[in-house]
Length: 372
Image (tube, rainbow, N blue to C red):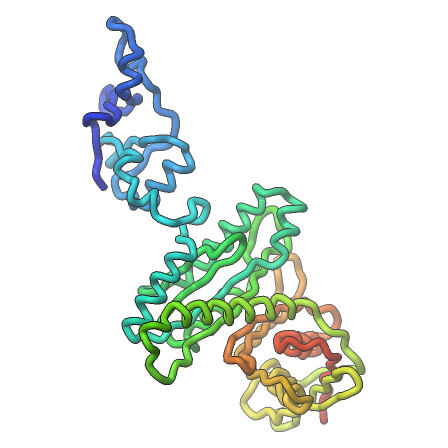
């Protein structure tokens, strides 16, 4: 980081016993009387920066503090000032001071470069559930904290070569060239538990949708921008479908609990759409009961026609407020990945089957049953 203690047009540091007291700018010095101590120039109000502070963080600091400069220390030793003029290149870049993330234009630059280099990319679109309700119930201050908490959680997904941007409002997008299955695994593990915010006891849940990672032939250079726009659209639609899946269908019939020891006994799930109904089966061998319910639900949906859903992951978890949730991830016919969470009201496996049906974008009635 470049530091300035004295330069034409820049503030001049006022230091006493190695401690920064303030700074005198040209206009400030002109206002002083000839016999007035220079220390009565411009006092500094704000936090100091460490010498190892990254440039982006320093720029964020100046924005938050609404200052034109900040003192920089190496331990307890004052070493100089960093000014807004020095950071203009960083301040002029398109990034969000609230989260420190870049905006969507950085995603487009990254995506076009990756595609032009021959890399296959995946995009994961994230959307905070019920964000409008947080703002309405608690105010924008809490809403900002929700966005920052979600941003911090999502940043743990980023690995070398990835990019995470704030797409707008309560939406984020992760771009990566890592294998699609690795991305799906990471996202599922990250979002299976809600993001904790002090003012939101039940936690904050995030919907997501994934696109890309399936190219089988090279793309023409003229199609890079269009390809990226298409991937963003697909991921956004998958995310919206996952969000719609939060609204569970009504269950019919009586569910008989599955037994982890019943290996080889078929799991059955009955799904109704209007006047039509189908029962799906899965003969469990090494799969867990949770996986078996997903596979049986997928079989029922395929028999109803028009829906193809491939279960990927499922998890039951206990939230901090004592409520049990099931979270499922699967791929649908257009190749996008979706995630759906549902609170368990009565029966774990019934709720699990309903979550799978909701993930597929359907709203029929479901009735898991065992044995077949």
